[in-house]
Image 1 (cartoon, rainbow, N blue to C red):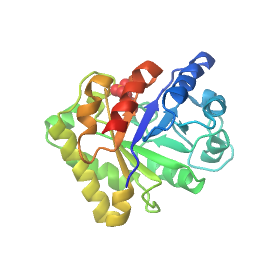
Image 2 (cartoon, rainbow, N blue to C red; image 1 turned 90 degrees about the vertical axis):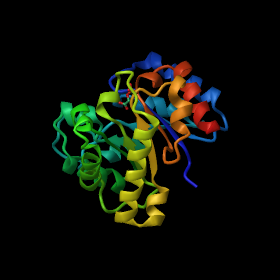
Image 3 (tube, protein in one colour; image 1 turned 30 degrees about the vertical axis):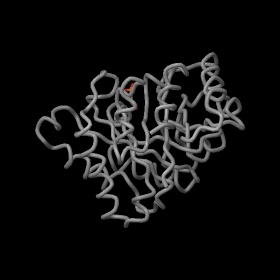
Image 4 (cartoon, protein in one colour; image 1 turned 180 degrees about the vertical axis):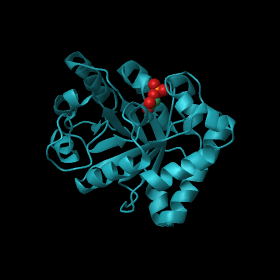
Length: 249
Ligand code: PGA
């Protein structure tokens, strides 16, 4: 059985004062059925991991360098993130792809580095609005799956997040039928490439304007194993009901 996963991506938000949000989640979700993840900015990672210690909240990083160490000013390796308390790393988020010109091959190289360091990877993908309108969504997803996911995954160390770019931070959410179609497609492609056993172990998250008010409907979809949440993960009072909805799904 796949354990459900509620992952909060704080993006470039949060200073010391925001650690109280992790404390609040920790207290509110003792014994949660779902796995709970917060990806704070790198500057808070270690302190967040100290706050979260011995509780239900684990930590993720938002990106990593593909290499182990070396002359790369400003970059952070997967080993370093693990040392700072991360157990997961988010890779290939559309904001990284857009702001830093990251392509599938970069995401794949980073994922290989992260897996080697012993981190689990959350690999993000999704189509632009024009691509959906041109009926190209599944082709785009097929390309991103083939290009971004490395060969050496065991299923449990991979999470795939489907995040339509037009749904991120916009309040727009695809229909249940649209999410179902893409998630079923991703599961089928993973099975084709990695076999049934591995494909069944991979968690598939939906991301893009998930809120307490739409979470229950999204979590009822068979191949949705949780969510990657941006804006609504910044405050415990907003993220908590999403976690509870996932626990109940
Ligand atoms: P959002 O962001 O929940 O604010 O739409 C989702 C994401 O970018 O992962």
